[in-house]
Image (cartoon, rainbow, N blue to C red; front, top):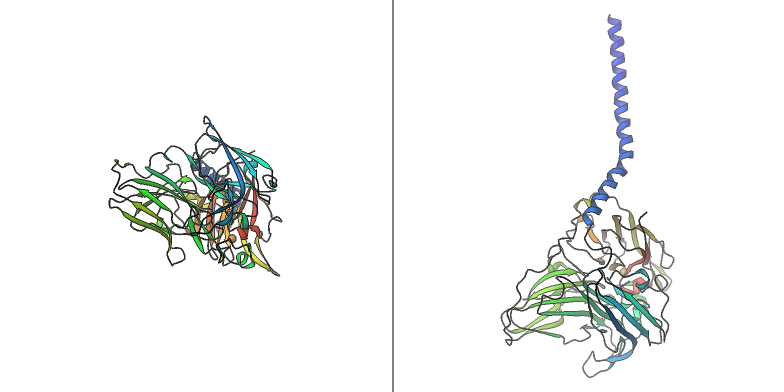
Length: 480
Ligand code: C2O
Ligand code: CU
């Protein structure tokens, strides 16, 4: 009996040990086997949440808008009494302020009358891949005297801009940029005043001409070329006239090679309604926003009842720089528009995205190769880059790591993305972007669901950094 009991006990111990081992084994196997399933399920949830944020295809039914653009040398007056030689679209800086309606097809017949090859990029607009303007990636350079027709139907209403994507450190700096607004429901018809302000800074010499030393080693090794004259629409005296209590939709674009702005509207009541084109999910705080090269911000301004001059300044550097003035005169008495600043219900929160695994990590570094400063992404300088492969329709998380001290406004072509975290902390950005600023040693996680198939570049919008290698290609393949 006793022996039997002992034997039973032994069996029980053995059974206990065996079942414990089985539990552990099952747990281990389950962890490995089920983990991908769990993250796949999470991705599907995040994709479902994204669904409808913006359309895969542009709406049809609009007109064909024929536009002629010519790039050529021109002169403009940046400083009183001085003709400054620039490169311009249709003879003006900024180039023509283009405005189309959602659904329209834009057909730009572009002629290059410069002595240098060039291309045009439609920053922020999801265009067909071969219309995106990056030489060698999307199209050949347009040689002097040649013509190229850009044709696309913008799928998203919003504030965009066009600029040279060839030798940008010189061509943007000389003035080859302009705005393009796509009007749509809630974007462009409700306000009494609707205007674009393109911010830029120029490096002028003593005679008021553009300093011809482009892409210097200081520009490359630091934060790009910063100018000594800040302009709005290429003027230091831009004024916007409005009547008391009117509503203004002001669309700010940063076309500078390197300068960052923090616009301050002072006493004016300013509400952010769109970032980088798309309408925000909730209106974020303007005072914490930076407008890095490439960025846009649309602001809803409530004009005060009191006539006066209201100045708008930039506070990014700490010493306020005047940008432009809003002039309110007592004149008109039209009944002001009353509506809430627009928001979009379609921006996903993506709260669970923090738990999703990182799919790609891009580490930005710099190397001083003799006299040459080189910027690398994962150790490689464009065009010796390693492309990133993405699949259309798949939720993708990318970690951007700045291992350097200079700033990097990272711009993705053809895609909007959301910022999830900055330096390990969750970021509450209720909107999409196409450009995010990484400051010194920042680590930023972004997420996107690519919809547009093709080869899209990702690069630093500080022109001198992009040209010194800080660019790669995202290859978005069709699903399945
Ligand atoms: Cu605003 Cu790659 O460009
Ligand atoms: Cu950079």
